[in-house]
Image (cartoon, rainbow, N blue to C red; front, side, top):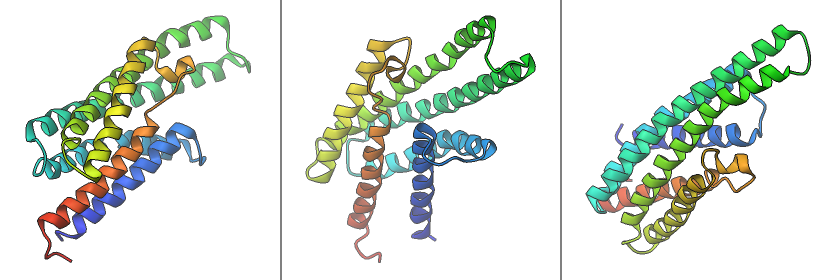
Length: 211
């Protein structure tokens, strides 16, 4: 059971990563209900994965730095869940109002109302990116003090996290993607995958007799 749990966690984590990428880029068309279910699962599963990874990393790297980073990440995933729930609720209500109007094009009043309300979830998106990028920076700052793979992961995380934070502050109140800039959120997925690989290596280092 001890060996199956990390494998199960890795599989679930991979599914959530793929769900996030599909949610961001729309690679595969899924039913509306399934897409919503997967989107709402991203935050809770990512929070659990963060706590598990931080527990493993804190055995080998600076515990206070790892702990601070994990707190920021867990908070960011709570904000992400809030943002997705608000976003989907706004879009669903907008579609209902559009259907009720009986016209293919929304009225000027409906467009204005949607624009005003939509800024609420865009603000939550920026809040998520701020906490998320700070969490990535803290954990990466602990890893960069190591050597080999952990140092490379740390450097990559520092660059992506700091750049993501800077872009969100620069383009506030809208997310960078809304302003035609680079969205570095998906670029951080490689950082997470590398963390899972590193965690597996550290587990083997700690338990060399396990097969």
